[in-house]
Length: 346
Image 1 (cartoon, rainbow, N blue to C red):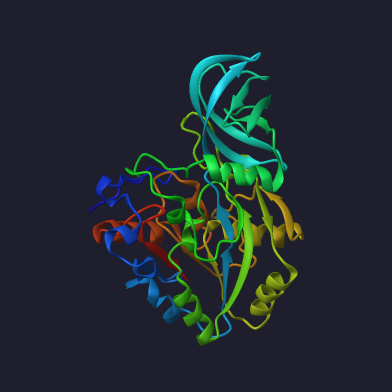
Image 2: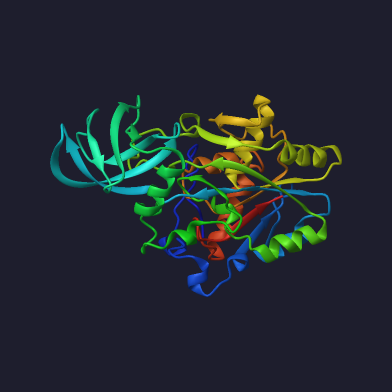
């Protein structure tokens, strides 16, 4: 199977049957038994394995960095009002990223939304459009609640973000990692989904260290290809504890490997290394020209054509070797997206 690669957009044709439309558990596969394509960063050599064998590619003293952000049900339905009058429409609002305890940037799936418009979600929760985001379809909305109270309402009325390749409204639990703790991700940090507690214990028993960081992933697609939604225009909030960062630095000092479980983890720890700050917001865009400061390898899913995640992968491995691996993955019928298989680049 030949990939039709078009420079410089990392374009190729992904057969529709390789879209993972349901969680592996619903296909009769344990989450830690999905397939894993192992790609050597230097040689480009490929091995085919299963994810529960990931410990075979790590050594005692290596550090596995995991994103503990918890997915929220970020699609909300609301009654639309203007100047206290109902417009007679129920509209969809997709939360994109949090500004503060009560203010979010959101994609409102409707025409002619204006500053001052109100949305009624239920008897407890409302929101108002307070600003337009420049050069973007996103709006800033302020909710009537904030903090924990707002999150509780979002969990009560919302549903998970899903895209056209997902043909069933799967429950929120399917969009969580087993170690997720701090609510805030609009889309699941999906590279961590394949881990089970049994596998994490297995890794610890071998002497592989675990470091948990947090980056709340935002909305990756704005339903309109005309808008540039590159990582540079996409700020995400991260927090890294001093203990976790020291664990990472110690691995570098002892020449052990630091393996990031997902592109969100790469973005967080590389932002911390670049900015010298363990918390804040980052719009770091990792590409082939970026000199990775802390990350030696990555556990990630398979990314769709033209995705900016592919740019990040070229910081780890030569583009030609990466696309050769993707060609192999398609030939071997690996599955794509958040419910799909895993690619270990090390």
